[in-house]
Length: 219
Picture 1 (cartoon, rainbow, N blue to C red):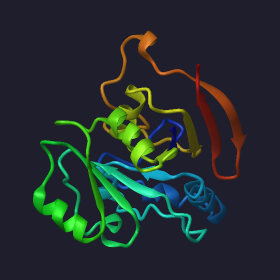
Picture 2: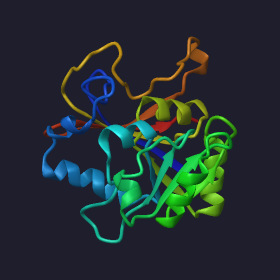
Picture 3: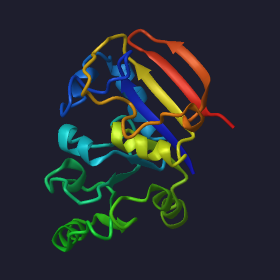
Picture 4: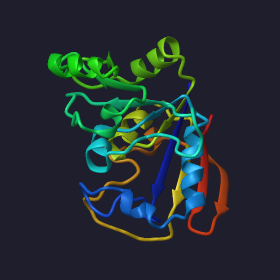
């Protein structure tokens, strides 16, 4: 399965204007054609995945608003199923898969989600096992390409397990800063360069409002 990290970042790699804040203010710096590029990319993949924190702060729809009937399967990993039931991805009719853990599953929430025709998948005991998830997505859900629009914690998990094939960044020409702000990849990090995940540059394309950066996993 091909996994693509797709994100909008500042020059210094920040995803928001501060810890716990929504990323939506950054989108005000884009024009309609820029937003169309994001949405149409969603139409090219089988699934899109964001983390619990993105659902809580942004409450996104995760749809392709520019092309009818080209909406990917929406995947939300949450080890404790602690996402609001009134979230857009749970309240509308779009196909949505909630991924949780053995010890984090909530029978009441699972019943509510199933009544709304949402799917629930168990992967892992205490933490979501992303390697197992990706295997099940490909074999059981016919997902062969996935777009990951995650925050720093989700991105760390898929990078750390060597599940990312390419990175596409829309880098805005701004500096945000903030030592506690969310970056493209957070998590534990690596103190030894030999463990760092290596990618090669495919394209660097200047646009009017951003620079498009495309990287592919080094082999």
